[in-house]
Amino acid sequence: MKNTFLDEHETRKELSNFVLRANRLSMDEECFNFEREFAEYQGRNDCILFNSGGSANLALLQACKNLGILSHGDQVGFSALTWSTNTMPIIQMGFEPVPIDCKIETLNVMAENLERTLKNKSLKALFITNVLGLTGDLSAIRDLCNKKNIILLEDNCESLGTELPENKAGNFSLGSTFSYFVAHHMSTIEGGSICTDNLELAKMLRMVRANGWDRNLSAIQQNEIRKKYEIKNEFQAKYTFYDLAFNFRPTEITGFLGRLQLKKLPASLAIREKNFSQFQDIIKSNPDLIALSRDHIQFLSSFAIPILCKTPELRDKYFYQFSGAGIEIRPMIAGNIQKQPFFKKYVSESYDLPSTDFIHQCGFYCGNYPELSRTDLDVIKSCLYGNN
Image 1 (cartoon, rainbow, N blue to C red):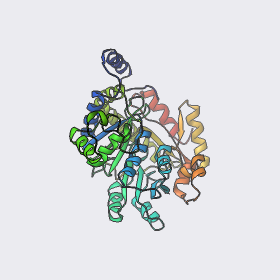
Image 2 (cartoon, rainbow, N blue to C red):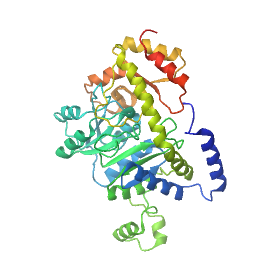
Image 3 (cartoon, rainbow, N blue to C red):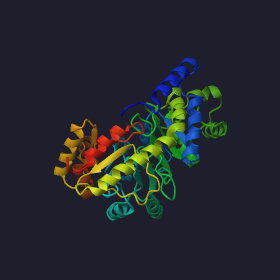
Image 4 (tube, rainbow, N blue to C red):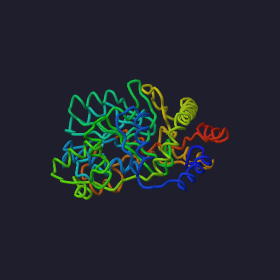
């Protein structure tokens, strides 16, 4: 990661000026304006801004539980190749976590993986992760979930901007989460959001975000809930808490940076997609590596370049090539999540996940940023050739 923001100097200057002139820095108009603008960008009815993508994941499951969409003990499937804060909320909410194997060539859960899991499990929900800019066959997954009465949720924190022919990633579900952490597609330093078309879920999320009170609801929604619970006046409503919640509020800095970075996002994504395609062309020509399948994806929005080797020994070889060239690399996110200490501590059942195991043992990734220079790109390309 080279910079905190796109157009680093300009953004820091504008942020400094904003902090000096702002009358209020706690959640206010900048946050609400960003929510409106991001919902419009994503093409969904509502966006609810949070202090992080991890908080958004936890809030989404809490809101589903508050609404009775999910209940304690429900089986909730999730992508076995994922990030900790996709899985931890399932455990924290008292659901039964069910990891689903991924397809090697896409790094993602596909409809065929879900069908295989459903032979042995009765899932109430699927909290799918769209991994590293890629996705599964989300339209087929959505159709299967609808057929089986499974609630589909998307963790789209790694695939902001990816488009399938049917829709954008993040738009196939009841609710989808996004992250604006510094290393992701756009940065608000920390920050995240949830997008949904469901009015009741959006209302609950605004309460879950802020202590369970009604202050951020519309006047009509406030009147409805106060009438339901016989709240007689504004004074009483100030400290009335309607359901289980957190304090996951963002600041005005988050909203301001989000609005600023959102304007720069399309140009940034175009560069990232171009970089990804160049690297993939080299990977396809290298017999040591596995080229990823993106045939079902119309536009691929990548903040990282996944590298999948054919054996663990080859991964070690390319690991040293990248490290020796001074390129920072990471494991393939959390790998097979059931190998993580927290999962072993809280989940006793073990699952056979051969493809995710392969990805865990044979994969890693490096960053893909619009600020990469031609020299940077050439160094990464040189490390992808097998004759180093």
